[in-house]
Length: 245
Image 1 (cartoon, rainbow, N blue to C red):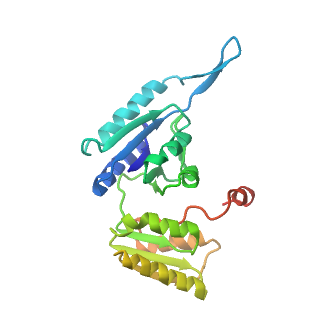
Image 2 (image 1 turned 180 degrees about the vertical axis):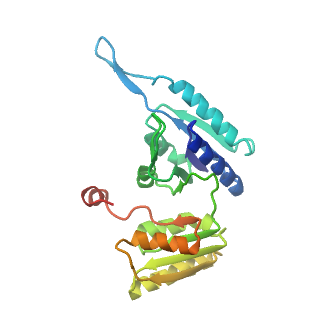
């Protein structure tokens, strides 16, 4: 089961079209969630009550129509529409219990009036793998670059990514380290992937740039990767808040 936030904007429609093709290739059910936060008003007697944002019902109807249009290629019962009057990121997190994979807009968030979704918050709070999509409607996973570091987050990413890793034409596993322990864990990770039928190879590289992320993105360009698999979180929430991520 795959879940995606849906609104009536063109970028969202492109992602929904890609999500439909992706879901169809996996024979997966696709859930589209429309969500808008409500404003609160104070009535004359002082009680607080929610009120619909002007035009929200119309926008939600447009979002549903767009979702049904972009997912009509899927079979009956394979595209499910849900709506919720709540802050969109919170609504998505609440519906993650229904999904094996959550699709999100790349770049951290999408902005459509009252329909913002934070990919970063989904990664931290979903408890499910999150695939961050770019603007293209195509989700390809033919050449995958897996960033390896022997941490809980990366081991989880490897396990969660197995359905796509097993389908890829090539999986390149890279570790930016130069010690024997890292080399041993990289070899073990590659061998584990091969046991699952993944066409994987591994590489140890010394960091060259000031930030390992820059090295990693250069490697992604060199390998022509169309999907990146990495651990989503490496520090405690307190450490992230104090020192940055």
